[in-house]
Image (cartoon, rainbow, N blue to C red; front, side):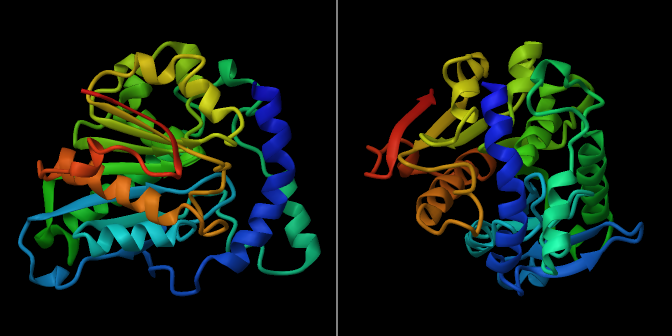
Length: 297
């Protein structure tokens, strides 16, 4: 499975880096910087500055070679639904780096994660730990700096991520117990690289509600969640959405086909687990784009 995943991702990193650079909107959230130099983007609900500690915060971790604004349709939709979304640019950020010439684009192929995607068993709590540091730094920044600290509810915090960002989000929720941040109350894992946790047997250590999203053409990811038992080992409450015909980049601006379905389920999930609001979609019969939908309870 993992060799197949790597064989799929390796050439796509070049295509995705160059394609994402063209596909992501120039106005994909405001580009900002923390006082320690971490760049990030924000999507805020209307009248954010008028709120007083009642706005839920969602951190977004991009995919390998992606960027903070790679899933701007989703992050904007969540802001429109009343959530503040902040997204750091990790060290492998590619959208700005690969807008240039072919040499720069081909250089994307030389990017490597800390451990090969082919060898999920080699991954451990130190693998890509810089992503944990980025997310923690941005969370601390938001809770201690204006305009965020006055508007954000510190008891309603969540993390979502795509691909390697999904790995980071799950790690922060306890899939690597040493990464666990008790401030995180929910995780949305979008086509997540969850195989390291499945092999390590730590999926059961995730301590918060989780929604997984994957696709029938999401090579390797669906297998880790279904055939290798990642979803089954996850504690309740949990959700698994499998999109019919969706590949690995369906959760980015490279593919607009599934954006509405992705955003609708994401919003319903956060409404239910962060705001404790009714979320009828989570109990409804799935639409045509959904190949499989599981939830417990």
